[in-house]
Image 1 (cartoon, rainbow, N blue to C red):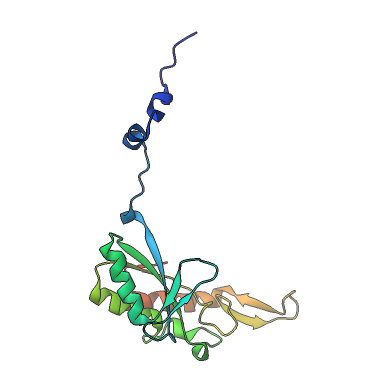
Image 2 (cartoon, rainbow, N blue to C red):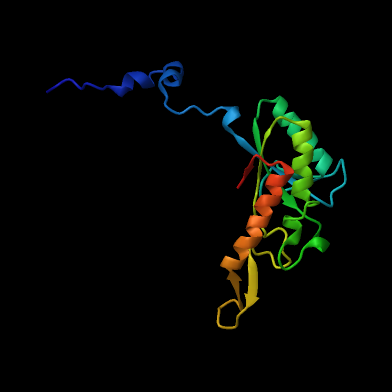
Length: 173
């Protein structure tokens, strides 16, 4: 019987040795923290997200203050998800690409007051009256009575991405 050349067991002996030889190291600087900013919340209010215990929706100003706290703790990146006022939603999700949209205003304020890497969510579902991330058309030949117009939706998603970039987003996703 030959002696094994690689005997990994010795590397698992204790946590200090495992820390030295591990290939993947995850640090707080590597994390991207999600922040949800809701247009119709007042400063000082925060709204719990029931499906994400411990996470909240914030007003614009509170979102920026929270981002500053995260930055002070060593986080480097956040991703911003916007929630517009319900009365602003329409069939094509125009609040998503408006220069005065909640994400665009948030990005400008975050860029002015923090050094965080700002990532934005390029999506239409929060901004459309029907809740789909694309344009829809009635179609009785489908099981749902409508179809999502993928090609036409791309033009609108491009408008969203461009408006986020113009507002100062470092990355659009």
